Image 1 (cartoon, one colour):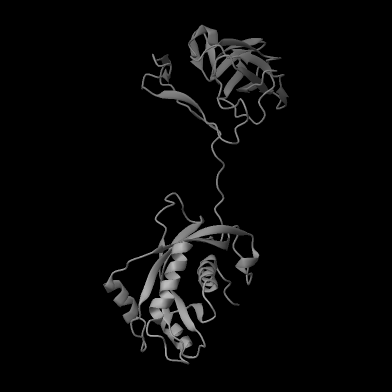
Image 2 (cartoon, rainbow, N blue to C red):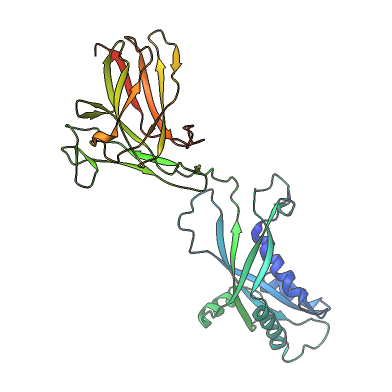
Length: 347
């Protein structure tokens, strides 16, 4: 089974076809080794300008890219003129052909190239039949040392003699992986939680600290997918006689529980109480709405009273809060703040 063409081969071939379109019928542009190009020129009715790719290098950018990500390459090429074998070559053929090629690339240094950009081909499938993306291929004139040029020519073998050449770098050429990495969606929100080793205190900067110096900081990031009004997170803690916690045990029949609610001042929140009853059934209370009145959990204005419906011994509940719209409805697809756990036992 023949190997299908790749984005690398397409990029070099389209570069050669672009150059060929800027010459007349007396010059043909090929992509081959210098030795094979010389052999072709002996039986050709036209002079040959050959594109010889002698080095591939990584782009030097895209430092965050890893395996299964798109790879970008720089291709180093030599443009070399070979006279046709049917007639005596013009004494300045190299200068004529290379001079015209230099003028073309000076006039069109950025060459549009249609390359595959979505998925690799299946067995035997042609890359060019897949969905394409137009890339801009830069042709930058290079100045390799004579030692490097001499090494390239002396390693070609055969009776090939040194010929004047123009060196260019073609960049950047994308290489699609066989299978693409599945990218994780951007973080919508995050909460840094700590387990207090003692009763937490509030520092002058408003951050919650424990005796060990740990800090709990609510974070909320806004992205292009963040729903309107959801670029902040409500934070809640049970408040019991001035002590703040994320878990609490209450007595059976308790009708209300105090919660210190913080976040964006004057914004509304929707608080949900989801029950798992003692017999394993679930029950969801109606959403309760509150307005954030403080940004510090130790501020008395942060305390709200959350109603509990039919709190019976053996039941457990989780309390979650999300930003709410002006009418009290939860913001669609908004991330929730931290979760509180309530158990009903001895109280």
